[in-house]
Image (cartoon, rainbow over all chains, first blue to last red; front, side):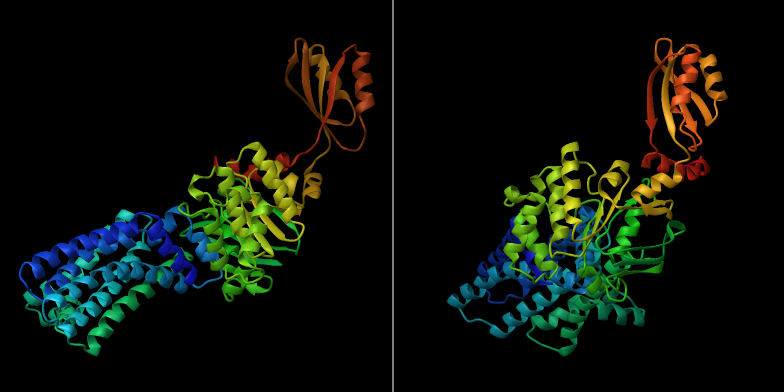
Length: 234
Length: 316
């Protein structure tokens, strides 16, 4: 797992993908930080984190699309799957590498609270809540995108499927508010990411929400390793 | 060392490997021979654990590839048909990654990688990006990858495909050297390669094993008598009449006009009597001059086409 983690992390930063991800992420974050917090003299970060959740729907699939698709296209999966390591180990290595790239990018935004703190008072609990929420959500995004990457040889198809899937998790909220059928509403409410992370944004930690994000991540990582294993039987 | 029992692999309704069994002893170099699409790569992918069999079992060094995959895979170095290379890494980085991935612990990492690089002759390209290397060097890096961790079993899928003739000879020599201490399965559809490298041949066609013997035995047993190619001056029909009337010749056929007025005849003998002297004398008596005379040995090519031709008829 460590070998895979190192190799993927290295691949992100020897090629352009890691830098491009960081650059776009930071560019958008800075933009919204400027227009929200600096223009309106607010110390409330909720809105920029809210937007972050949205553009990560596109950015994370673009970052993770190659993780399995490229292995399959180059047939390097033959090396990974005949090496004396478990499939789960390989999947986790890739997951943590992508998460590390995200965390590196995210760490660059830590300058915002510092800037705000210099000018006024900082709502510390809320900000910590925001950061934890975004890390949980990004983990779920990465796990979902990794799963779609394992389905196809084509990076583009992998990215499109992931973006659509992530968007659906968002639309779930829309469906839940607009449907009149109770059980659909209940199911949609359960799957909706928005309702979950709003709690975090308010600085509220509930076990259910933590479990929700960890479960989504866990389920999709499990599914990914199942898909990879299943290919042996195809 | 390698024990394959009743291996079957189906892709949907398509039977790629059909109930094959064989075993390979420690230290053997075995050639896995068959036309394209015969099931060679599938079988190798199953042995290495990349694919799972529909039924049957594979044991490496006593470890079942399904029940004990990690232990079984530790014994194997695998070079797939397309070397599994990360084109964005340098050779050094790539081999270090493979070393870590395979959890090799014996010797130091750098010492071991240097040894392997020396063995396959890639020391001078170690700092180059894999993607920029020529096909031959990529193949060698692939071979180096398989050798990391000193596995007891090497499985090489068409290791010389796409290489130039010099590189082919080098890789073959390398395989022979490696085979002194290791068990090697080598797949190919190039027949001279088997003659050059392997001690034993497993011939596979349409998912079935059609021959399993030493390289020498296989060419002998299928050879139905000796063949000669003779060039004789004189009218075709008269010469053929002489040849067909001779004892010990089972058939004589005209191949082509080798020189003006002289034809090449392919003669099949019954393998019991040495007909060379009587043949030349009989022709000389009729004043037909023998211009050239050569023995045509049964090659692996003949055996191969002999054993695989039935299916081709069936397909057509």
